[in-house]
Length: 159
Image (cartoon, rainbow, N blue to C red; front, side):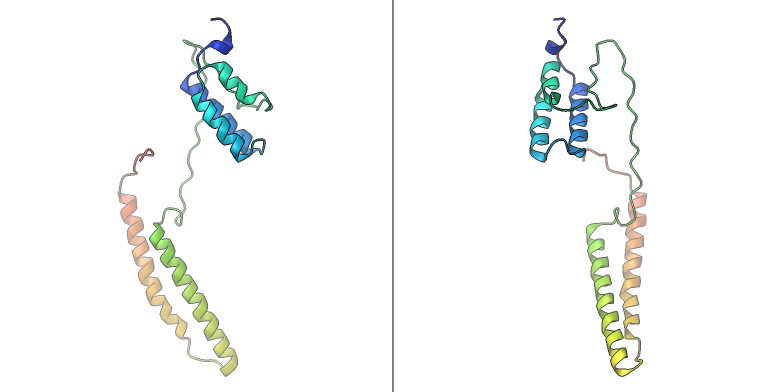
């Protein structure tokens, strides 16, 4: 069993192959259907030969080669990507995003109407300022939800 193509691949090898396929898809070398097909075959592969067949028409990627780990030989640790801090809007619940969008649309419509009326009839009372009241309430709710979420532990990534 000295032929490398007949040796069984590990989960780490299959994951490295999937990462290389993702990089090839991101570079535009594979369309979505090819990527999906090859990804299915990568996770279903048993030997190194099965994995090698996935890359016969792809150029060697610098740093993204499939690493074949021999038993007893430690491999170099892969650098881990640290996820960026989520922005305020990204971490906001969907319901609050919808409410902020509706409020902004209502403010825009009211300011437009007030501007058109003021241009036609001269300066008038600035009644759109009353929309600051629901905006302030919405801001307070958003701040309290954000504070409550910060105090809660993060759910595990697999849930």
